[in-house]
Structure formats: C-alpha cells, structure tokens
Amino acid sequence: MLKVSRKPGGEPEIFHSIQGEGVSMGVPSVFLRLATCNLACHWCDTKYTWDWQNFDYQTEVVELDSEEIQRRIRAFNCPHVVITGGEPLLQQAGLEPLVESLAADGYTFEVETNGTIAPLPGMLRHIGQWNVSPKLRTSGNTSEAREIPLVLETFAQLPKAYFKFVITGESDVDDVCTMRDKYNLSPDRVLLMPEGRTPDALKNKSAWLSEACVRHGFRFTTRLHILLWGDERGR
Image 1 (cartoon, one colour):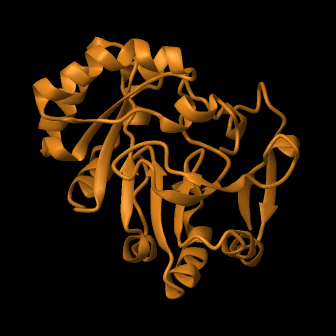
Image 2 (image 1 turned 180 degrees about the vertical axis):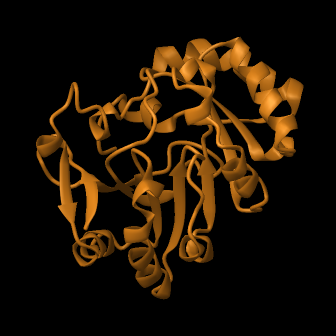
C-alpha cells in the first residue's frame, strides 16, 4: 500500500495537469502526490503531506494499492507521470512495481525528490528524469538532515538528474555555487527557482534571480502552476 495525499474533497491527489517547474515545464503530465516527508522546510507549500502537528493524518492521507493507483493514472490517457510529495523515495519499495507495470505500457516518469535518499535499482531502470531539490540553509533543516553527500554524489553521476534549488534570497545563490563545486555539477544541470506561493511573490524574486542565472550559467525556472492557478491543491 502507498500513502497518497488527498485533495480537499477527500479524493486521492492523482490529477492531470502540466508540469509547472523545471526542465520539462509545460509538459502535460499525470501527478501522483505521495504523503510523508523526512524534512521540514518552513516555506513548504505541501505541509499537509507531512506536518501532523497542524494537519490531520486521517484527513490528509489515503492508503491505496498499486492496482488502484494504476487504474486512476491510466484513466487520464496521458503517458507521462510525475511522482511527487512529500518525499516519494520514502515509499520507493512500494513504487517499484507500480512504475515497472506502467513502464511496460510505455509510460515515462519524473520523480521529484529532496536528494536525501538513494534510488533503488528498479527505480533507476525506469525513471527517465530525476528532479533533485537539495535544501539550503534557509529551508530551516539541519545540514545533517538535508545534505547526505553519498546520495547527492549518486544523483550527480546520473545523466538524467537535474538539480532544482528553491531560492528565498540572494545568499541562497552563494550556497548553490558551493554545492555546484562540491558535487561537480555542470551549470546546465542546475536550476534556480524563486520561492513563492503567489504570482506577486514570484515576480518580486524573478528579476534578480534570472540575472543570477545569467551570471553563473544556471537555468531559471518559475512556478508556472502558481502563475496560472495560484496556490491551488491538485492543479
């Protein structure tokens, strides 16, 4: 059984939309949002997947077997799946058979991960893109929790992995440069994304952040779903 986040109405958070972030921004995708996380970012916009001091687990999480999740994914007739969270790799043992079955029918996958858990071999075989989002000091997590060097080194060696950093202020860019050098990341694999849950918040950070990308050779990504729909769950 997999722990899946719920929409406000109680249905599993499995939905058809477009990828709002990263190198595949704009691609039509089916999203599978899994619950639980091993970090606690203070700016997180999906705290309902893990913050059980402020959200009720029974209200926010439903446990589904692989067959039911596959049925819901297949109903959208879209062959590209984005597995997100929470932190999906906490449940990767249960994800493996789901991914393997869908991959046999031609489905392709992206996984959004915080880069603290190494992927299992079955996931490595079938995941076409890893969107790795290491957390910086301003996330509020301890360095020991948010940066696991052996795991980040593993992702750095995967040609299908991109590194997407949430940027809250200009000091974050310096921390990204430190990680770039530490893990030998080529700039074209590094994406800077403004933190924000409203179009205005994104706009206020985007001008100087895009200039930082030009300066360092990094990619810039906005949060397209926020610009289109605001901070609406399941979009």
